[in-house]
Length: 270
Image (cartoon, rainbow, N blue to C red; front, side, top):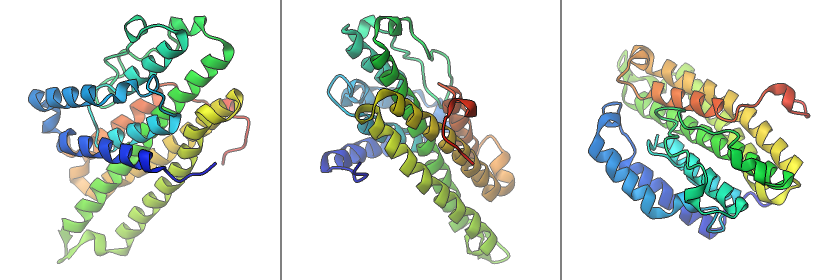
């Protein structure tokens, strides 16, 4: 496995990041901006990101987009449609005949998540496992992206918030918290990249196992990162106006979609 992204994959990441940065919510108030959401919906629909699998994209490429969208709290459906697209491709039906799960948006709600759509009954055990591995990996990528976003939010706040005549980021205790969060995210990126590659490249049982391991590891790490972000923000981190809680909610929502229990994993995790 080569963990390096190809030139095309880097371009895909840049395109997803640019869209997310331009139109993702920059504040809690932006979540209620219908004009922004409409522009975001139109932009995402026009990119073809929702039909990546039928266009021949790999699990790694789906994960790249999911991670960037999680990082900027993109609040229009992506994971639901892209999983429906993969399912339709495997069933041999048009996307309109498969469950679109169009309301699945982890910033807002889990309504519409179909963890075991009836169309899976028409697939072979191999295809069912591949689809499940993709669902695990895509939700894990969203979790990792949200953790990255939460850390960025905390770092930016630590650079500008002053106490006792100095920015709080200059204090060792705060710096250590942020450094530990970064280390957790780096570990998450590695295990996520392996799971995303495994979707298409490893035997199906190993691909599902890789997805399960990644989901458990990354969900635990992301929860710590989000809680650290709230802690660094201090009192304001516990208010509705601070985006830190939105990142935390997104991590929790994505963790509950296609959840994994520790006993389902056959290798040891500490």
